[in-house]
Length: 306
Image (cartoon, rainbow, N blue to C red; front, top):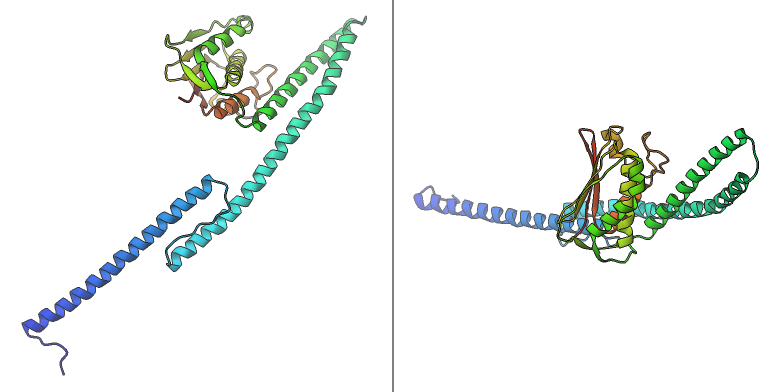
């Protein structure tokens, strides 16, 4: 018995059956692909959310596809490892901050005593050689005191997160006041700063004391590295640029200027914390700070939030 006839009607009926089967298969494939794409989007969205927030919630998807659920489970296992590593990092970072704070605080008391005894020794009669030795000790003690104070301030800044009070701040006014306070140090290095501030006031919601500290650290950096010039520019958009010729630097050194405790040979009595503190404070105010070096000129740019 023949299942189908080779007559035109039989061929037409067979073709319709084949086309129908193919259409059903294509529809099933489209539905399968759609389900897989939906599951992939769910995994992508959930994964991004887990990375942005510190949560123990794992990725769950609506798809019943075995392979997609296996993928979600694999990602969940890696998320658990990442969460544990993040927890250990935070714990270690907190312990390091506390240790730095305690060490710097403990160093301040004996250093104060040393400086006090040095004052008493300077009042006593002594030989010329003893005077030279005393001068060296005083110089080293002052450097150590400066490092300890910077270390203490830095530890307090990084531990405080963003606890400063924001208020409307005239950025140009603060900048001018900071430059004026560095007049003596700049004059000693024969640096005459060229300041460009727009007539329109640039007002931002900032922590005034933090902004003063940032500008002071950048000016102090200019005193260390400038070959004798300093250009300071403030734009109406809230971008501040400190630029100066610094032939004693190179691109590698400039790339590390914001690293904690990093100093270069050109720096005199540097603790290596000034620019690290500036970066921390700027980031706490939701701004950005970066350094560039081109044709022997160092430029440090701050972008303040609107």
